Length: 617
Ligand SMILES: NC(=O)C1=CN([C@@H]2O[C@H](COP(=O)(O)OP(=O)(O)OC[C@H]3O[C@@H](n4cnc5c(N)ncnc54)[C@H](OP(=O)(O)O)[C@@H]3O)[C@@H](O)[C@H]2O)C=CC1
Ligand SMILES: O=C1O[C@H](COP(=O)(O)O)[C@@H](O)[C@H](O)[C@H]1O
Image 1 (tube, rainbow, N blue to C red):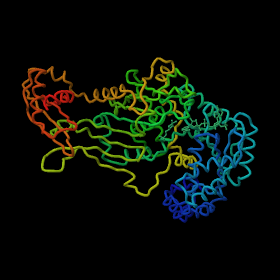
Image 2 (cartoon, rainbow, N blue to C red):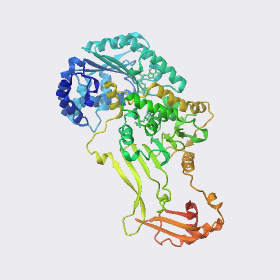
Image 3 (cartoon, rainbow, N blue to C red):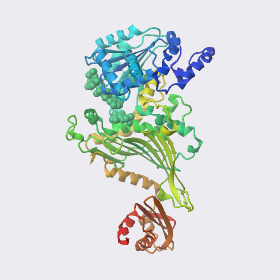
Image 4 (cartoon, helix red, strand yellow):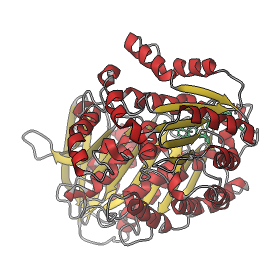
């Protein structure tokens, strides 16, 4: 049997000769993977049919086929795999299953509507869509009686020959997972013993807290082995999330820096510029922490924070993720800010007195040798001012900085997951020109520019392919899920009980201002910058005060630094500031940043500058 790792250039065939003679074929599949032209792949069914008698059939069953996820994500992902040659029609059949009494044709028309958008007017595209739709058969039935599932089994069996591989994708509300899994086990699992299998893909949310998740896991676990269960978190299928392991463990220069000695804080941020949009009923039961933070953002945190696994085997990677999760300290109430956008409760499916947060900033702290003291700021919100998901790794200030660069901003490594995948490093460089001035710039790897013409696969596309290949690396293991819920369950219970209330915020804003304050506090505490008070405590010291001013007027930047006085009490700031302001050139408008330094430390007095500016002009 050819194993599912075929397209990775691997095979489970014991015959080395077979592997060698087919290696070129396998490579050709890989090289063509991201080409957008479906007809480049018209030869793939032939390539695959060479193995057909050994592979047998692959049946993909989408349960909940009438629903939103199936329409928007699952079927489009299957279509993309089909047109790239990964689902050869000679082997693959797709079944939609749901209670809705719709016909085959009605389901196909729904899917066609999503696959053929106005921009895809190419006749080749619609021909490809039509061929794909021919693979689909709809079966209607309930989720808790055998009748429909026997019908489904009959339909699947009609198309099968050789070994039978059956993939069940549960695009359903979690409340029906246990009964659906029971029915699948009883009526529909693969009967083939020659290389066949049955696998179950379950969507998030897996439960609502530790207890309910464990209960769900136990119910499904009684029916299927862990190796058959694929708990999907689609963030694990995103290109830049998949890149995290490579970045961290295949680049020498990150290794010595990736720790508490160098990193000040890590921010993992998800923003959407739209609200719950027709999903209010679902959302209100879960809220932003269960919808985004406990799963998507926490998975990203694991990949940022975990230790190097001993190999890339799924179990080795998942072992390391579990260790990080188990090292997260209990969340402190004062390190949480919740928000709810104005107008959220006007959705008729949301109760008027809903306490559900649509925004949250939560600070997680990892108690281990690498991360002690480094705040991981997880922030997610709906109806905000932009749509973005990114990771910001902020480095500590340069010790003994002779350039006084702190006000330029710190070194930062930003990984933008979406939109427009990119990673860039913010660093301080010399401002080109005759002066020895510094400026912040970027080393920029924007995928759109660097990988022109490369189509980045959709997360669901990759993850479904992984399930067909039997690769569980990018899926959540039962103990990992439990550890993830253990972090958030106490906080979620407090919110569910109404003890912690969301702060209202305007749709289209940054969310509650308190979230920014929390971020500043967490990151400033960490940095231990001296405050005015720290400096004032040193009154009497003989050190001089220096001013550093930077500003921007029109296209020009301006910087000035000089010793402006001696420290002899808080009033000296005003005096020194006044002196510094006299240095401002006439054309200055724009933003002005000013700091005063005392005895080798800098104190931000930006507010004072703004205050004093007008009288001076
Ligand atoms: N939609 C999305 O963007 C995302 C969804 N998910 C998850 O995917 C799963 C499916 O989501 P989605 O498609 O939006 O859900 P839907 O509400 O659209 O439900 C899917 C299908 O399930 C059936 N169904 C709905 N409610 C019930 C019920 N109470 N009891 C039994 N059957 C029901 C319906 O089919 P019928 O009545 O025909 O049987 C419906 O078409 C959920 O777990 C969700 O959390 C995850 C990420 C994103
Ligand atoms: O899981 C979910 O994710 C989407 C956001 O996914 P993205 O890939 O577009 O970032 C979110 O809108 C939805 O509420 C949530 O259930």
